[in-house]
Image 1 (cartoon, helix red, strand yellow):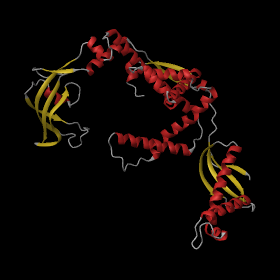
Image 2 (cartoon, rainbow, N blue to C red):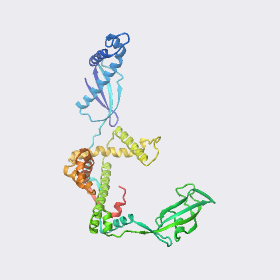
Image 3 (tube, rainbow, N blue to C red):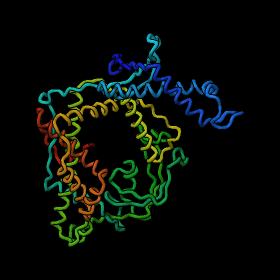
Length: 435
């Protein structure tokens, strides 16, 4: 038995496997005899049909199965013997000219894994973003937490910005009520841009129980196409005006944030710790993205088409599932996989490149790194040790932490090799970045 490998296009290869007819015939005869013992043929007791009859009835199919099985075995043995790095087996095709009477030849077309050579990382230029939490960031976060706990108290004065109003309204265009133009007991907060400016201006200054007709011009690019560019008259009645009351920063407020003894200084420390953790997470994510982009740009190699195809399909299915979770009907939704080809190529490229960098530079996660990441997961829970124990009770649960540790190792390694320029960002700039 012998095999030769032919290079086709890019990563595509063809492996020609030669199978001795003597092996094919011997295995075929063996299986025909096995079939004879169990097959039932009309006119004969089970297992008593003549061998020639069984061969004439089932021989062709059995031989086809034998040739397929032997060819597959021969292919994978040659892959192991020749140390071939197979990405995906694309197809099996016949060899048209069977020149050797003693052997049957079969062609296996497959994609090989690309040869990846790591570029000179010292030639990379990478921007590293840095930021720190300042006192004013802590105070601003506390103010946000106060606003999240706002209560509204009814007042008898005129409505003003910051007040929550509850209104009835009916809108008409050319004297006719339009779809979506009316509501009862509709609440919103003035001054937050929840309604069109002319509408809000008409409500301001009204007291509970007062009514007013307000003319509102819808913008040309308004999301409601039926009313875009048109002018409506809204009959508005104010049912309730309530002013915003923010909680004081005191022991009760601290306890509402989980500080059992109500110590306000502890609360500030906890807020600082939480936003520092989130700031670090976002900085790490942005810097990791910068490193990955630099690595992709510095390396060019052919990608297995099968890998790109599978990743494109996976991304398409992922988007379809996301739509379904949002309540959209996806029963007949077909997302072409080629919509995701570019993104899939990026992912496949990194998926092949990173293991090479990790292996060559011994960047696997250590047990200490995994423990540290799991501990950071657990910090925000009431009983951190319970969370840590849960993770370590099952190795599969540690996979996410391990992946994060490996990614951090790669990022730190590359940053240590590359030309790095730091960019200082404010806390707000980082927290407003979509990473």
